[in-house]
Image 1 (cartoon, rainbow, N blue to C red):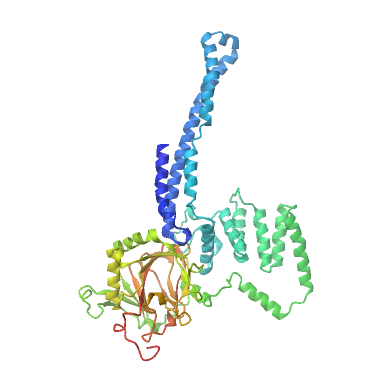
Image 2: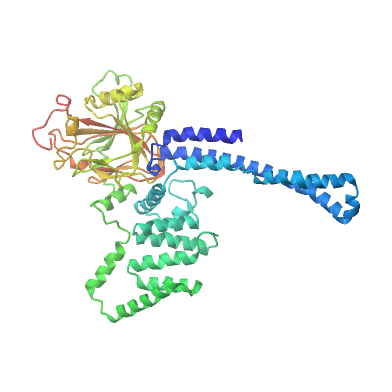
Length: 541
């Protein structure tokens, strides 16, 4: 029992640091702590089971001893009790020992486990986290055009060919994903995941919590909401074969049959047919603000990259010393052209593994859900299209941060004294940041006013981890895609020398399909660059 209490003391200390955080699903880094917590909980649960088993063993030995005595006594009760010792022991057992047994049986060895578990549950992921993680799976499904079978089997692109049992979705898991979609009035994904749940059930997978009747109920309604009356009727009839007394299904059967007969009587003109065809093609498409979603998702999949042989011929790798900078004369940098116009360059092996781990260590306790600046109000707020957590590190906080800042200045030739602090970001389940600009546009005149350092002239993006699949940085306007590579940094200018915004730099962080993505950003501002990057005479100069 002392071991059990000690185990939970450790858990309490772990969660004390974590309790200030929420939105677990938005950071894989924070979720790794949950794995260790669960492992310790399982260990303490085993301690409790051993305590219960020990208690039952004592009760079992007591029962076996009494069974022998009562069997012997019941064969010749008078003869057995005629022996004064037997008579004495019978009275003693009934008066004393059975009371001791009652006390043993009533001893609750679960108290410590239950009370500590209750404490820890206050810091567990909440319903919002489960919903967020479920929506992330559907986002990955859409972005990378994955079918439900691929996700359910755990055989994601970039993963090992043999999926472990922990990476496989059960019937209940698929059903729960469908319910999340249904609650979000997303009937397209409701149908897909309920169909997958039904498929696994029909293939013989056992489930104590979900049956075919419940699944078919969701399926019939979800396809009806998508305008497919025939299929809705088919699922309803299948449901009634399993449960003829199902009240809602019986009502739906009559309604669907009536609507179908009504539909057949009406003449369908070409416009209606075209409208239905378009509705079918656009099933599952989110009706949101993002005009270039199709291009964004194609680039994330590695499609639509506008890399031509002519453009490729203008891209080079070289050793770079920034005009014989003293730091790089003897040890020049490895520079690679990622794109020609606008110029996007990558610097390889720019920060050591040790320094990157230190940055992660400093940032992790301070990670909070990443925010965006509302273009109308200017207020910082969370958004469904930015799934990550971030922390800000100042140069004064640790020599490693100061060292990285100085290296950025030496490489770019820009003054970082007016730059923002180093932002460290860790992406969550399906973590992404949809297309956006780093600089403030003309319709956002107050974007960086409080900083007093002008607009964001350039972006430095350091990849602090490799990612098995997904997680690319894509530029939707120019059709470029940059893959994460640990220890490398990409750099580009957000503004023309004239100070006008370069709208070609609109970019996005693709959803992380597999892996844990860590990056750090340095946004360099205009102030201090007057003599380092001189203005041009024309707005595109």
